[in-house]
Length: 258
Image 1 (cartoon, rainbow, N blue to C red):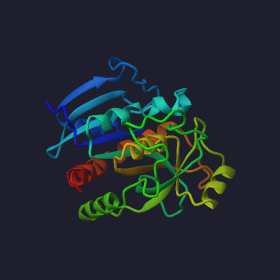
Image 2: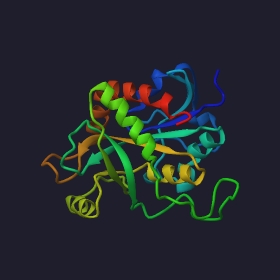
Image 3: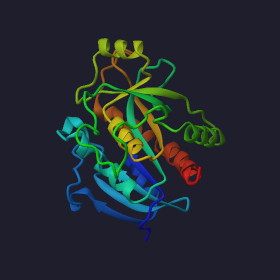
Image 4: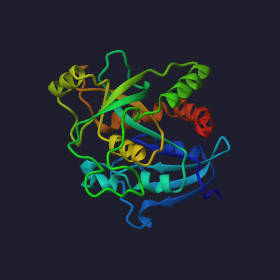
């Protein structure tokens, strides 16, 4: 059994079935890990899965915690801190997101090239642990451009394109209003969601390069006349599961040593 993963993966809403693609799996429920926050959101299994993906030792967080569940930013990034401490060379973060960019369609996979933190908080607030990283970490390339290039090459080989966009993070749990979406579009956001940013900040703090992929599970409020519901989010995640798994199977081996 693998104990030293090379790549860490965090799975978002509706994407948890990816963990089943790992070989020689060892699954540990979050409730069995001291101080690890439980996942209470529907569509998050709540377990840490060790195994191999395309021959690469991998650890997967099948489910995450969110600010809207009542956790602090520091609790939310416990998983990232743990995986980085285990020695991962790359972190892949996934999420379900609302599509703001009108060029996206429901079910599209989009790389995150940058983010806008509108959650009103940050996991690095408070005393800095210098053994983890610097007091003022640089975020110029919070999302690895090299990793994005690798992912786009793999996607092209699989016959689809992977656009890149800016992700805006809000606290939730309510979906955004049409006015908020117009504002987000005006300030340069292509995607909107309620996760990811704290995890990416913590990874950069510990010098772990990040690849982030959003699944556009719904169009954001006001983009269409349809109302948004969480079941739609989960169903879209299930629909793109096959393409998502094939993409990560191709990408993960290329991130090690990249």
